[in-house]
Length: 264
Image (cartoon, rainbow, N blue to C red; front, side, top):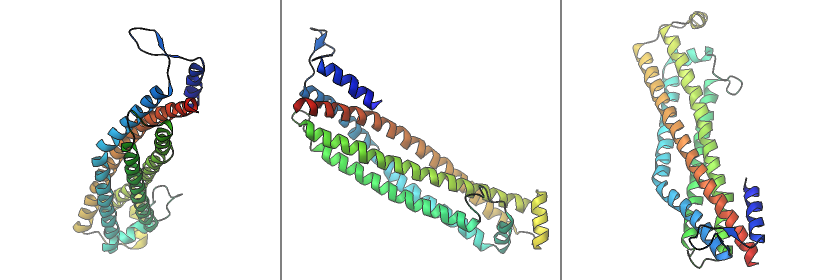
């Protein structure tokens, strides 16, 4: 799409003029100054959205820390009850091809959370650098090379960091979904409604769970499901923002590259 737009605009420029809205003439020539103006305008939209999203980024950080607490509670739940810790040995862990046991599942999620925290910091840093460099641009006198530099940074670094954050959050979503499914399996075992689990309990010689065991599992399962719902909302929100950034940045870079060609 980007290459097609560059090709189309280049043809129009080589012809000397491009159609422009005007009350006096159906055509007006597009020069480097106009191209710079358009590029700056699209970058200003990105800057505005990034500033509006700053509070959202802060909530991401708070959410990741809260999710760490949820995972920690999950781990404690497994370790705190002899009955539960024995039961999980016989659970058919979801997605067994990826996670062979509960300990690995917890470790995988903790690792994903660390990756997401790092991705969030990189995205926050690239956002700050973009805004700092954009604020140095003059809306009327900025050179094509200056605008192009900011547009290229946004296209190659800012968008890449946004994509990395999306991927990290999706990995967390997948591993927490596995944890939630495992918790549901534990709850099924405690309710003794499954023939498979009844046999497993018989083989292992497990005693009946306490009411406290059941309460912990229910509380953990509800907390996990609530976090997954919040996480998926954040992934959707970030994806929508990234798409808006991408469209504006792509246009800004196209106009700035064409302006550079005219100036040279």
